[in-house]
Image (cartoon, rainbow, N blue to C red):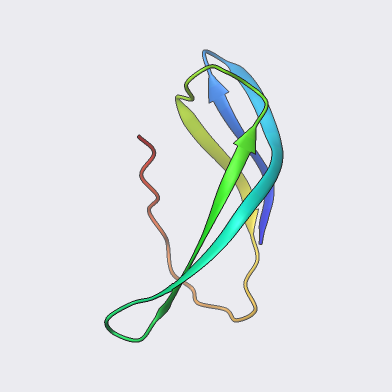
Length: 69
C-alpha cells in the first residue's frame, strides 16, 4: 500500500486521483507480480514520482529502485 503519492513537474505537485486495473502475473520463478495503474488529474508529463510511504504485510528491509520514464 502506498501513502501520499503524487507526481511533480516544474515544481507543481499533482496528487494521485485513483488507481485502477490490478493485474497479477505469475513469473517464471513462481513469484507473483502485481501491477496497478495510477491516475493523476493532469495533462503534463511528470518529471518525478513522489511516494512518502509504503506498507507491506511482511517486513523486507530492502530498498526498491523504481525507474520513471
